[in-house]
Length: 284
Image 1 (cartoon, rainbow, N blue to C red):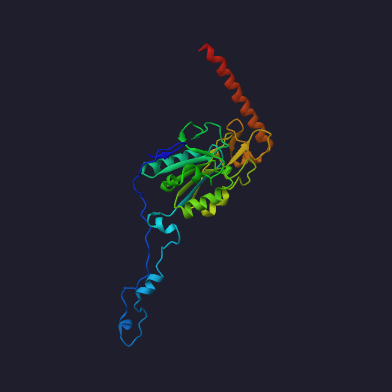
Image 2: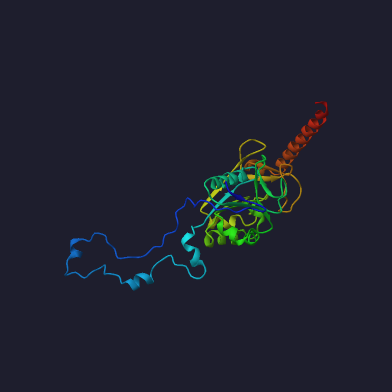
């Protein structure tokens, strides 16, 4: 599997599994005509097309500098993975990126430089799986920092914690529509108030596919669609883990204060268990 990270070494990769784009040319129809249309007394409904006319309406030509690489460029794609915290979004993203790499495609991973929970230069799942990445404050700077030549050789770009990128929409448009990249985006679709978080929902109209994952409610075990914040902070961006957030079902989210109180009990229980483990460690 080929991947790029902080200071990647480039090498040639096998051609993509996807077919190269075809230039379409409108030509006279050669389909079977009914006997009446073959009658010379009837005017031709499918007259021959002059070579000059054919050349004037050919499709697939590209103006300007894009003409040079158009013969080798595949069409781009955008795939979006959303859900609450602890739903396995990053795991699904890494699985897809690794699959693309194993298929001989050239891949790179990006995450927000704001997320330093587990590692600075790696995307890390909650269960510890890692993948090297570029930690950036914005996406549109990626091409310049990665290198224009290296960027042109990329096939697939993964984006983790996409809700933190304000330029997500513009980047996906450029990467998929103009540069022919497959962009796989993972992020929260809603914040702890169940309101749109960042620009993740803005790229839904751009997407070839959208996958909504669910977690398991930490209070009852049912499917969890929402993220509950267990602390009193009110800012939208509060980067943390299980110490601050928990996945919950609709019932337990709507219950409001009861949910918060239950969350505090769960948190206190975990702290007690952690303290007991620490006290027991020297004895072991």
